[in-house]
Image (cartoon, rainbow, N blue to C red; front, side, top):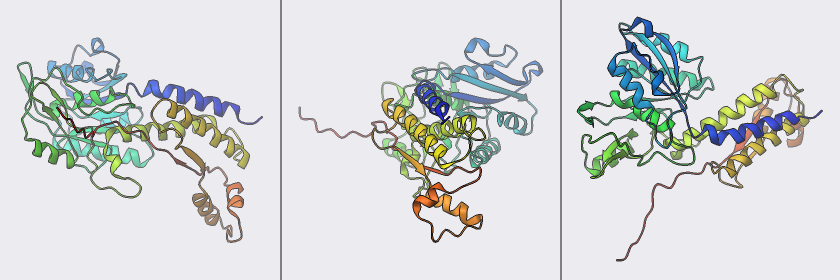
Length: 356
């Protein structure tokens, strides 16, 4: 009777959302000569890094676990032969995995960065939510973090942007959704290539993710992705990593919970759609309590425009139908909902007048 378990599942999902948002998952594609290490590895700490890997690759993985507020929940490592001509085998495997960010090999070149960016775009076009950190990749995409800092000094070693993409992905994955990674410190880094403030501002405005030395320590400039072109569906706020993280989590939560607990399990009647809407509203309410959504601004209901378009495509004359008629109409196995939410942004720009 009714749809009680839908409501329970959404409440459970919402309760787990804040816990999940504390730690993300990073996928790393490596090239290594060690034949015994090739294939997929699932790591939850640095002690699980395959011993057969080369030292530089081990260090590349280790940096991922440095994280920020937390280390990543886990790191997926797919090892290709060092002679691999492309990353296709790794990307094909990762298409069956769930993760937040994917990074290329330690020395990721322009062709490999393009291959990863194209793969991420294709996955997102299919409703999935992977993102990537790539070196010097101005992709104009909310799913691509364009890391451009060079001269990264750690101890006696110096890294370019590609060698530190895993570290940046781990830092972002270790940033809770309730805060931003802006000004996140990288305590192991002693120096980076210095830029004037005007040049740093210009880089950030171009959608570059940079780290800089503030005269005391090295830290993140601003938590932005490479998105440059905004539109009514994807405004300026989508240039911020924090916002995209929250949108992706919410979209995925709703889709997966509805698929697992509603689609194919209940008659797609108007009453059952209303129960599904009520369950999603409860999910939003919990995210408001958790500080991810702005309280009192979330809503969800039947998308009458999409529903009417479906009816018309099925040959139904909708000219005489009321809005309520359209809401209650039979839509076969399709569910058309429309939600409105306001994600709480982290405080980043503060103007203070100080009189001393």
